[in-house]
Length: 489
Image (cartoon, rainbow, N blue to C red; front, side, top):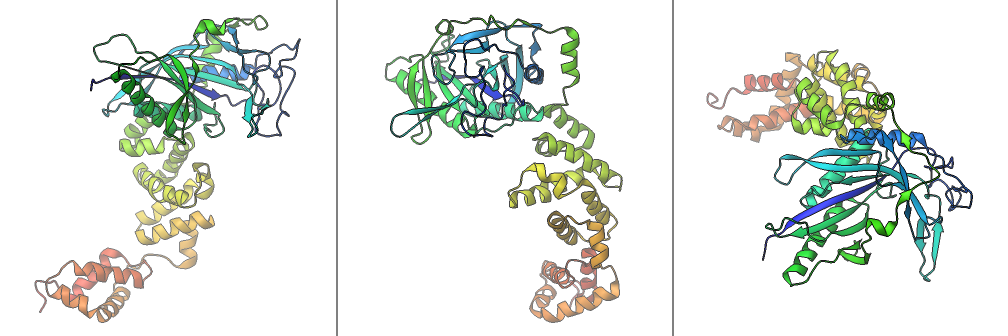
């Protein structure tokens, strides 16, 4: 079989987090009411209704462009795109075409070879979302216009993606960035973030791209990967059989695991774009653009790299702690608290990435619960108690979990419950003698030369003291009582 090159471009549609719709003052909370209760004369396309631009949505879209390394264009023009479907009743969509808001950016992802590479961003433009069609079992269809007119960004990549796996990572990276800067909810299930995938294959010796097939409205990372993988193989099989690939639009049927033809793919001239006559051009001066730049937070990749350099974290730990912006903020707050008591940033990273994330997962809670569940000061208290050898690591884990559940200060619990580490030789000698007496078989194995058996006996001392015995002193006490395997009689 001939080897083929895969080429993928994604068109990601991301709703913009604004209170109002794109071209009227109607609520954009389309999921917050009964069908057709978040509507206006503009979203219904009634005669004489005129659009008014939601400039907050424009600001957030511009920030998105900056986060994706795009250039904000000084002049941006809205256009009408002919639209024949009933979920936009005026018969056209207000969007952007020849002069979009942002152009020529890039996003860095990890390639299938493990090396980073850049996926180009052709454009970021803003438009209005459509209503929702609900197809009923009897063959009729219902329309809910609540979503019609919600601000929607379209982020169009260049055809730089080379595999289904890379497409999935690119989509995940975009979601991370959009959530990080607060312009999108990241909710794929509700359609707040979805994408179309343009897929083609060609022999390596062919310079021209193969015919492009578009897979519409994919709303899951897993579905993106599966749909593209299927479509790539479908096209290869068709070419190997001597057929040709037809440019068309297909849908992903998850139940069957296949793409299904929907219609022939429209070209730009089919949409009959022309400038929107009711909205003047948007003109952005240098001061407006500078204000957007100044409002941009430190982005995930930059923060990851800073965490590695400033806090000596591994790349794996730094990536874990910068997956979401609230996690990164929480980590830095914890570092401030931890270093004030002599602990290190790496100590904080270990407890957050280990115990805290485990507890959140066990309780099926999101990272928005971090500061409420475990204030940074509480982690600092655990680290301080450990650093001063006031408690053992076993007790520290118990305290951490109890603090997570009860919201109590670890330091206060140690004082109230008498949980300090036992480092009194006489007290531990008594515990050691009891353990030796109760486990004569293990003692015999140790004295017979099995030196590792002492670990069991140390464990029994820890159990007897509810984890409060100083582990090193417990071992030394046992060794003094039993002698070493070599010298024991």
